[in-house]
Image 1 (cartoon, rainbow, N blue to C red):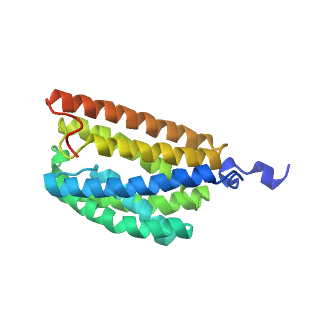
Image 2 (cartoon, one colour; image 1 turned 45 degrees about the horizontal axis):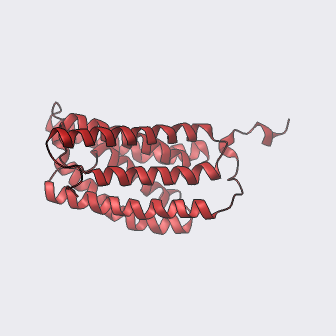
Image 3 (cartoon, helix red, strand yellow; image 1 turned 135 degrees about the vertical axis):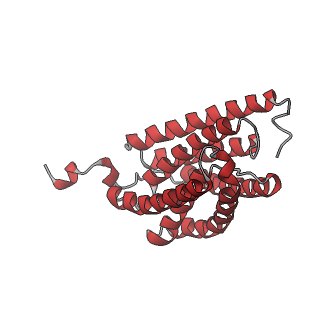
Length: 228
C-alpha cells in the first residue's frame, strides 16, 4: 500500500467539479455575511445589547485573523476578510462592553478573565487546527466555529428570555449563509464525512434557533417581522 493510499480524507485535494454552483454559493455567503454584520452592528448600537454571543464573536474574529494573516487564504477570500475584520472588531468591542448581562452569575473580574482566556484559546486553536488537519482553506475550522456559534445563539436566547438584540432577519440570513456554504463545501469535498456531520448540526441548530426566536416574539406579543 502506498503512502498516498494511507492518507486520511482531510489530505485529499478538492474535487474537480463545475465551479459555477459553489462560486454562486460562496458569493451568497459573502454578501449575506456582510449584511448580517451590518445588521448586528446597527442593533448593538441601537439596543446596547450584544447581537451575537460574545464568545462566538471572539471565535469568529480569531478565524478571520488566522486566514487573513497567519495562514493567508486565497486572494479573493483574503480581500473579503479585510472588509469583515474591521466590522467584526467593532461588533466584538460592543459585545464585550454590553455582554456582561449574559453572564449573570459571573463577577465583573471573572467576565474579563473569561473573555481574555477564551480569546487566547481561539487565537491559538485556529492556527493549530489548521496545521493539524493540513487545512489551509479553513474547512474544518469553519464548521467547528459555526456549530459553536449557532449553539451559543440558542443559549443566548434562553439566558435572556427575551428577543433583546435579536431579529428574525438576522436568524434567517445566518441560515442562508450556512446553507449556501454547505452546498459549496459538499460539492468540493464529498468524502469528508465529519464536515458533512458538522454542516448538518449547524443547519439543525439554525432551524431550532429560528423556531425558538419566533415563539419568543409571539410570547412577547410582538410581530416577529417588524423588528429589523
